[in-house]
Image (cartoon, rainbow, N blue to C red; front, top):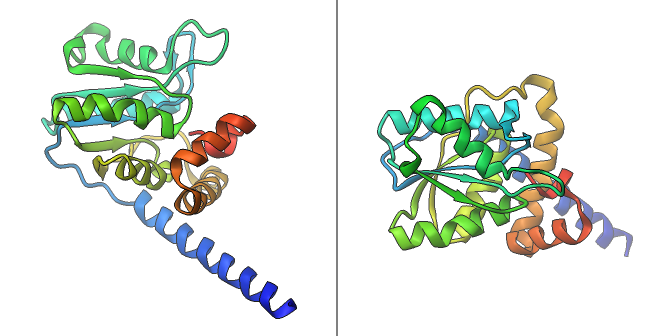
Length: 208
């Protein structure tokens, strides 16, 4: 019995180690190419003003849009109780300010976590025939976002923001979180992982 338990522990540790390497390698990939849409993963906003983290993602999406990789930017994210604006609304306002991006080129989607963000955006993208997408988020969040998008029958490519305010040693707990999220999502399914986040309120680990 002890040998079996020991073997299971070794297998689990090896699985987590391999997943961690995959998350790290994906964080270093930047592969923009012509796509149907640019999808910005949601992050915190403060009374309609994107957090520095969200602003960095939006700046990257705007750059990709200006370079002509896609003509549509999908902004995602719902709101916390008591908020006046959703993350998607704050993102849209940020992008349209002083004519940066036309409102006609922006699509808003909801969602309280990464799964819901993409699950809400996917039907609208499919209806437009825009299933090839560029995923814009923080580098450490790219692997899980790509995996979720693929599970929703989107064809994603990584385009993580290169100006994230989360840098250096500060990224370590985020990479740890994403390693656990990707590892669990592959086993139980990313939709169930999203349900687990919703039922337990574990946004710190299974949200964004």
